[in-house]
Length: 350
Image (cartoon, rainbow, N blue to C red; front, side, top):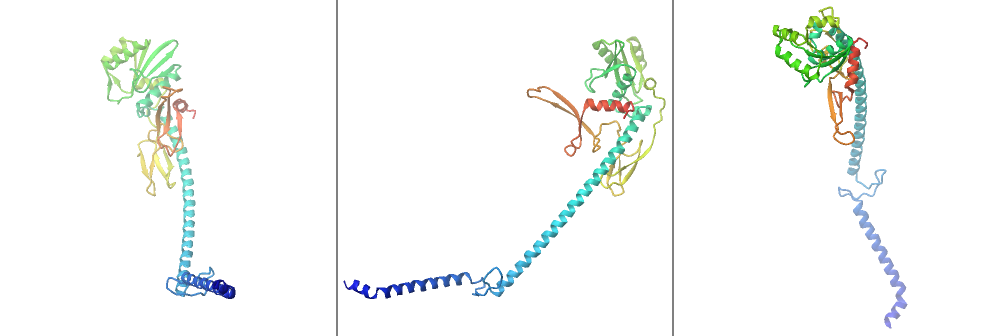
């Protein structure tokens, strides 16, 4: 009863005191938090604003802040400078790339004309024919027979069964064997016996044995007995219409693919590589002029064969020439298409 009487008389005062105590506690707590969070790492309480961002710091903190801002500005300047240098380097690389592409186009253009001229001279001189490799010699002989009215079918370069081509004219089948041997070697009787076995197998009417070297006496007697015509370089040059033994030697210049400096070569008897004035190696396009080469990067072409193992193209074979500079160059051409171009080159039409 006394407690309720006390509350009735002094309750408002007690409530006012409690409210005042709570307010004082909140103020003290905020002050403690404020001092705790506005004291710098140097232990200095400084409510004065020094920087625009509203940070409460001492003078040392402000100096450190200025130093950090300067470092940020310098880093930004360095980054911009680096970016400008990278852009400049990129522009320079693009310029060099364009220049090298122009050098490559010019090199390929000159190489193509040089090789075309060399091919034409190689096919019109005995020494040029001797410089051919065996595969080129087979192609040349087949081309000569085609020009003389034969329908010629060439066999594979390897595993040909003792014959290099089958020629048909006026209903008669002629087997052709081509031997690109050194001039000092000779064709012997066993070589002709192997060829005669191929003639029997193909049921040929006659055989033509073409060689860049001579024949032994026994080989000549055997050939006369079994209807085999022996053709040496003298007779082959007569059939092909070759009238001279002297090769045409000429000079030409090609650009370096790296710096564009012109380097001079000779068509016959020169080095396969030379250094330009700036120390870069430059290839001689006159070396192996009849070898298949890429028209874009002048690299050697490789013969590639693909055999499909899955349906619907099971066991299907595709053969083509691909650039030896793959994957930097993706040029490719079908073997039949390349042979057509080669025949046009032999005819002097391209």
